Amino acid sequence: MKIGYKTSDGRFSAEFEGTEVELVQQIARFEEIFGNNVCSNGKESSDKTIFVTRTDKEENLYLELVCIDESKPALRFAKRRFGQNKGKDGKIFPRDGGKWYKWDKEKQVEVDIVTGKPAEKKSE
Image (cartoon, rainbow, N blue to C red; front, top):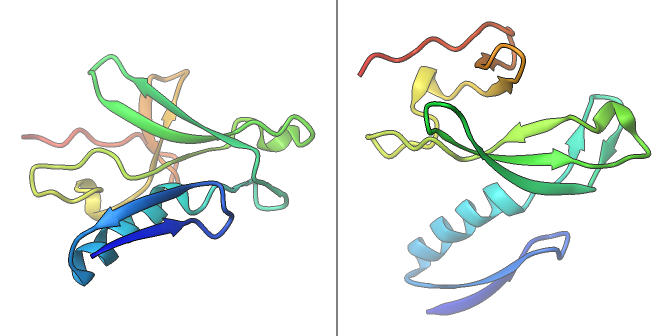
């Protein structure tokens, strides 16, 4: 079976092919990345975002959604990291049961979004 799919905001569309189960899995992955393109600081939100990729000094790839709304400077540097760092077990967020981290440019380390503490290095 082959279908076309468009995000609810209409910004992105794609075609998928497979069984019903495979289609649902593909659409879910597509929606995770492209379905929510809104950044927020808790008071205001904006859909003026761009996709950015970067690599740190350990060659880890980061995929980010960055707010570029100049009219709301409190949002300008808001970032949300989404679906990256698949581990050997195939999970999107293998470390610490799925906690979210952000890159602290000054300290050159990932920090837990909730606690603000540096991420612990996972021993392989």
